[in-house]
Length: 379
Ligand SMILES: *[C@@H]1O[C@H](CO)[C@@H](O)[C@H](O)[C@H]1NC(C)=O
Ligand SMILES: *[C@@H]1O[C@H](CO)[C@@H](O)[C@H](O)[C@H]1NC(C)=O
Ligand SMILES: *[C@@H]1O[C@H](CO)[C@@H](O)[C@H](O)[C@H]1NC(C)=O
Ligand SMILES: *[C@@H]1O[C@H](CO)[C@@H](O)[C@H](O)[C@H]1NC(C)=O
Ligand SMILES: *[C@@H]1O[C@H](CO)[C@@H](O)[C@H](O)[C@H]1NC(C)=O
Image 1 (tube, rainbow, N blue to C red):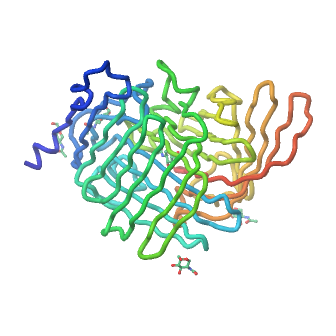
Image 2 (cartoon, rainbow, N blue to C red; image 1 turned 90 degrees about the vertical axis):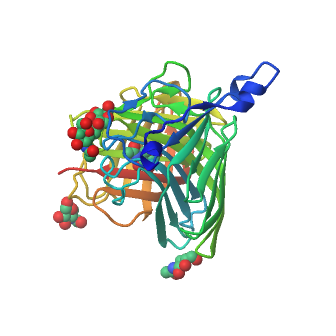
Image 3 (cartoon, rainbow, N blue to C red; image 1 turned 135 degrees about the vertical axis):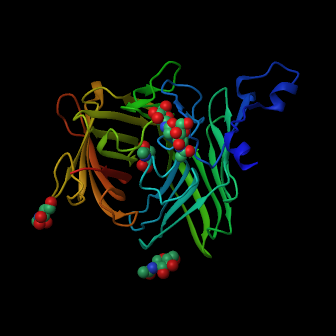
């Protein structure tokens, strides 16, 4: 039975779409996927051109591929260190070594930082996962069976994570009200766009920024705040680290701007970039062109960073705004949101920056909060 289950990849066109009498609207059609928890010993296929936003992208999950849905929320209160990250993995540890050892590929992971900076995290194996995608406009709902962790979305990409997990000792919800449009690594969401961020690395960002309400009880204590939230997914048909030498990713809200940056250094010695800026609900830039963004560490560190080197104290980031000039900012690390480890850091910090227009005239000083991370995998 287990074996049978492990081989199943079930695609069901939802009954509601079939029984409707009026002409179905695109968003009426959903597909349901079951991802077994057992690693599959066959070749996998990954999708690297735009398809349904937020659907599963790799099938089946063998020992060297990975696919996951990532969500975070961070306070905008500069005196608090509150944040929460929830990731829904369909990823074996053999493909992503930063996961704890497990025979399960379906894993739910939560990381919490309390307002006082104290960290807490929990990871749970799921008895498989069900993901239901909206074939029309995109968006997905997912249930990681047996963990009490699930997420849902509306056609407007309003996501909600619901947790009722006696195992983790967590109950409550996190809801995301998007403030800026989704995008792919090199442009807005549109048919025929690439979703390749770097070599063999797929990425799509359903929620670059959102008004996010966190209301959780974690081991009996309440973590509640309204802040800035984010959701993306990434996937690959190769183990993480095959191509990645180091990477910087970050996102945040600076004055009226919602920002996302990627600056990846590959094993081949090339740089992959992706820049996104939205203001007042409109995309100002969504690009992977050379020079679209540059992120560099500050403090006692090198670029590219090496595994044995220290973490930076911050980053200097410059976005190209085209005719509007440049957005130049400095990020200052306030706290690490994961336990110290040489390969990976996820940080909350403050941002300070300004727009420098095409004539070099500086705009007013802007401040904000960022959530950002770095991998450094080699010496
Ligand atoms: C995976 O399949 C290959 C080819 O069928 C076989 O040689 C190998 O032993 C299998 N590995 C596992 C872990 O089952
Ligand atoms: C898993 O799939 C990938 C991508 O197709 C392939 O390169 C790899 O060899 C597969 N691994 C196994 C164990 O079949
Ligand atoms: C930080 O806050 C958490 C949650 O309220 C609490 O459990 C923990 O004891 C606090 N830690 C310190 C060092 O005060
Ligand atoms: C995927 O992206 C999220 C942030 O967007 C990040 O936290 C995560 O580490 C990324 N991982 C990989 C392997 O792409
Ligand atoms: C800078 O980092 C190097 C290790 O990369 C370390 O040996 C050195 O002591 C550091 N210097 C300072 C001033 O922290």
